[in-house]
Image (cartoon, rainbow, N blue to C red; front, side, top):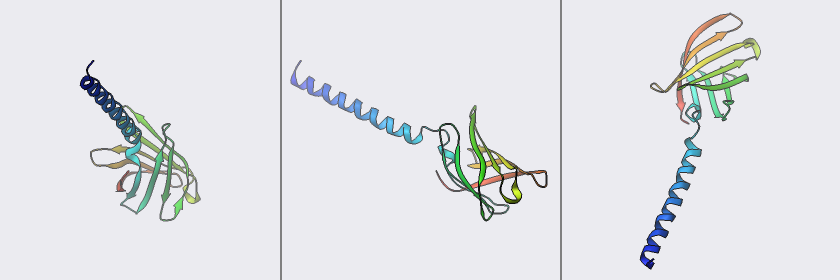
Amino acid sequence: MTPQRRRGLWHLSAGLVWAALLQSAAAQTIGSPYAVLEGRWVRPDGGYTLYIRRVDADGRIEASYANPRPLPFAKAQAALEGTTLKLQFELRAGGYAGSTYTLRYNAASDTLDGEYFQAVARETYPVRFHRLTGP
């Protein structure tokens, strides 16, 4: 093998290794189907704010909610059903014991759409959250 051919093969090998490293780093950054959910969301009909900090690979959501004071979630879970991202949140604080949000991510409008069940009043309302900040 000539020195030129050897150098060419070395450059090709180095390029392939570099491409594989870049692809691996990109996959770690955008690999989760839940990454699109991260950010701050607001319900314009009252200023209720949902802040999704992180969703792990099992769909557990690290999030907070404000109405306008912060309220903890007793449960916050996401699931991928087919191509649909579904979210379930349950509140148990104050006058919200057992109230839930059942939402779906709408990629076309970049919104979280669904229903809010107000447990005390035993009523369900359609809701929509708009993104304030991105993932």
